[in-house]
Every structure is written in structure tokens, then in C-alpha cells.
Amino acid sequence: MTDPIRFTVSPQGDGGDVRAILAAHMNYEQTKSVRLFWVHVLAALGGLLAFCVVFPRVGAAYLPGIVLTAWCTCALGVVIAAIAERQWQRREADLLIRAAPQSNPVP
Image (cartoon, rainbow, N blue to C red; front, side):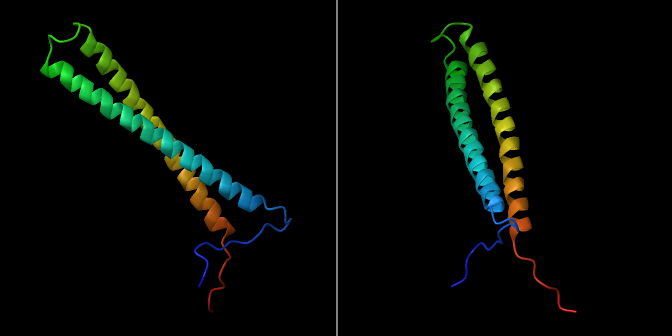
């Protein structure tokens, strides 16, 4: 059985490459969970906004405006979190490629 991920240790032997890969992976997972949280808040606010549109006389007159503002703010948060998630994902992939053993091309 082969290892799914193989990489070499840095020449200094201090484990810096492994530490950088693990740090990038942890940051990626953290930004992913933040994005998923804001996606769920966005869905809840969307449901509340739909309720305010369907039943306009149930809540206060200013409620749809507040909910719409909150929805737009959460949408912006989702976009920012998605950009940060993608950056950490690319950083992790770059570190894995850099730490992978280089195969010798056949002449």
C-alpha cells in the first residue's frame, strides 16, 4: 500500500515544510467552516426575507429593509470567506507540490 501523500523533509530537518503544510490546511479548514456558517445565516435570512415579502402586515414596516441589509452583509461575508478559503486551498496545494519528491525524467 502506498501513501496517498508523500513529501520530503526540509534539508534543515526541522519539519518546517510539514508545519507549513499543516498550518495551511488548518487555515483552509477554518475559513471553510466560517464560509459554511455564513451560508447558513444567509439562508435563514433569505427565509425571513421571503416571509416578510409574502406576509407584509405581520411585522413592522421597516423589518424587510433591515433583513435585506443583513442579507446583503452576509452575502458579502460569504464572498470574502470564499476568497480567503480559495487562497488557503491554493497555498496548501502549492506547499504539497513543493514538498513532493521530484521524479527524474527519463532521458
